[in-house]
Amino acid sequence: MCGAIVTGMTQIVFLTLFLGLTLGPQPVGVEVTGPVASVELILDGYSAETLEKEPWKGEIDFGSQLLPHRLVARALDADGNELARVEQRVNVPHPLAEAALIVEAKSARLIWQSLDTEKPKDVQWILDGKRLEADSIRAPLPALDPDKPHLLRAIATSKSGGVAEAEVVFGGGMTGVAASALTAVPVRVDNDADVASNMANAITVNGEPAQVVAVEQVAGDIIFVRDPTLNDFARIDPESRAHRRSGFGSVDMGRPRLEKNQGIRFFWPVAVRTRGTAPADLFAASRTFFIADGDEIRGVLTNISAPSSERLRFADAIAVAGLQAAASHRPRAVVLIVGSQYKDASQLTPQQTKEYLAAIGIPLYIWTTTAATATAWGEARRIDGSDRVRDAAADLLGDVRRQRIVWIAGDHMLDEIEVSGQRVTALWK
Image 1 (tube, rainbow, N blue to C red):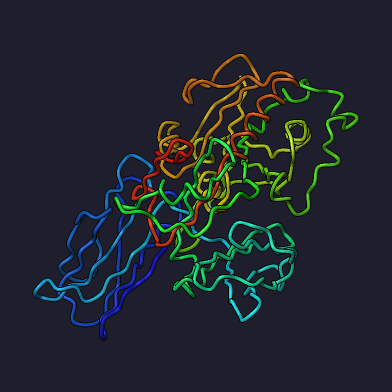
Image 2: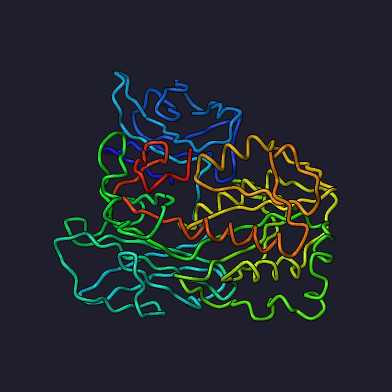
């Protein structure tokens, strides 16, 4: 997120945008207008540097740990009074597509912007955690209590598989509050009984009770980072490759059923460097498959094709996969699958990546197709057999189905939020 507060004729904007994963010392530049005497750079609430003159450029050390950060630049007058400020979030999800919602008298309308299509192929509408019977850019709304806040959410998919999501709160004195003023809190619950009523007492922000707007149970987003050199899957179930016995041919690639199917996709540890004002590494990815059980996961694993590369970056790809999974605002998990030839050319270490995923609430699973364990990642689960793949996949799906997304009022970082309760736990550390 990057937003500016402007007073009078003074304005400040970041010239440096951190859209990729960022750590260590980094140059920071801002541009200001008006009678500004100095610019203070603040990282995570602590003053990091004060710039006294043009060009307004400095350096911020984001540390050796890959963690989410809040970076603020304050334009000050000669007496140290704040004239304007700008803020951006670092190492947090940034939207790849744009969507917005407009709530009308008895319906809601999706405003959609995409480079590849004028209209989304499919739209799923969710009101207060429950599906609406609508699939276009407009949805009729049922009669609602105007004294209570209601969360309306739309998940739109383009023809190429790109997803854009939009949320808005209305009613209960919160009409017009958009996604920027809401925080998606990922939690894990013990069971389904009376979950929503317990959330109000389980979540606090900076010590104060959070205002829970909605609790959602929706389709998950599971990302596999798989070694593209693996040939082990051919022997896990050779007949499935020849006859598609595993059911891969029947896997639902359409819209997900929110209560049952989970979305899975693949990130290959093969990076391509983008060029532009904010360079970043992109990793080859598959489309999303919607699956219902462990057998269908096994089917996809044994039939998916992979790009080839001599330089594989597992830790970097897992960090990016975690960032994208967090951006989906859904139940989530990232799974690394490696074999005996594991070798990593990443810029990040496995420990840095594991700490980052823990900080943004992404469960990480490590699977191996051999008896050998990728020791840098810790203990790995063996999947060198059809039954072992099915059992590992079933446990993975079980964890994702226990996750909920709790929407609370306000724009917060996860480290400002506490979750306590006998039947609910936070996904982040």
